[in-house]
Length: 222
Length: 289
Image (cartoon, rainbow over the protein chains, first blue to last red):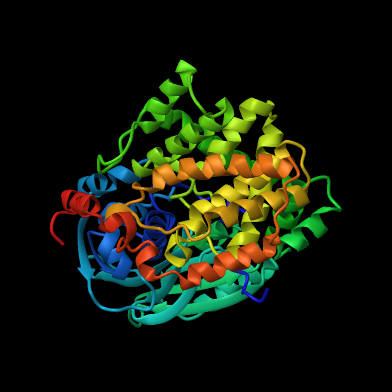
């Protein structure tokens, strides 16, 4: 058989543990929201969510809206508070709007999320590829491909010289190999984002990276 | 790693069981220890059991379209007058329970997907009570199901949007059938027979969710998947053999999925979704679109 192997772990088949009803439309959506919130690094005041194709047509029935907002509040797909997320977001003073779009995009389950707090703004395109697995395909207009399932660090830091060297030195000293690396920023001297896909599971290094000067936030995902 | 049923049977022969082999492969691929891997699976098992208990107590979906059937089945089962054997009817009840909890945005373990999560969990808990399975044997049940599921997922698919309901409930029922065979002492080859019988029987099953919701007919399809899993397991254990080899059945399922029109692949544009009642319910839930 010549088909590409898309599933490698027994937990791709038995799992994830999640709040229903759909692995792609609910669990995947929550994971997108959570990643986006972590990249943003703080609680937004305003979130505009643009939904495309299947997400646009069926988001209410699948709780995609609820899951995205739950993720933006920091909830994982198995957080039993997910069904109350819209109310919790309202209570937290976050203004959320949903805009179903009819534009064609690359993948049927896509959402563009725009977060704002004062002058701090972030735009991310998230894609749910099935079974709760997701990709982040664009940050602030930069095309990137970030697949969840690979150990990944996302740093949010001040755009000052030497940051890449400092971060990669921590990984080098821990003998962690970097598979891919993406660097982007909001504006010169403003917030910058670094995404590092690595070969080893080392969640402990997030705290080490967070302690570096000029680093605002570091998140570790698998 | 294994990519075919033949490879799974051959490679697992060096291990005490298919489950042991699956744990070893997972350890190799993930860098996690077997203890960590078993702990993650034990957590999945707990979620499955909790969702069954919750569903049997009686739940209502977010839309109000479904719910309460697991409770009805539980009362019918308790009354003691029914056609099916007690184990199979309990599995049917359990499967319905999990998917009713799924439809109310409760906590479930996707197996292999959320919409088909009731089949493996439902069969496992019914078999647990029938065979007095230990905790370790119950966790092994899930590794066995996962091993066969990986082959199906990689050679056909597990998403309704790609292959219809055969990919979801069909895959889940085949995984459950294989695990039931092994739980009852059958070997990997016998389990593979049960996989082939199941997938052949459910081939072509379309995904036609009313209003695009994971409710109608998904919940009842899980009941059917659980019943088919026990039928296939008993047939295989009786010595009934598939004429078409398991790997060829999986390839056929993949072709059928690709050839299936998109109106039957989770788009709510065909089958039960476009019946007058299906369309009325869509209006009722979402209003004019």
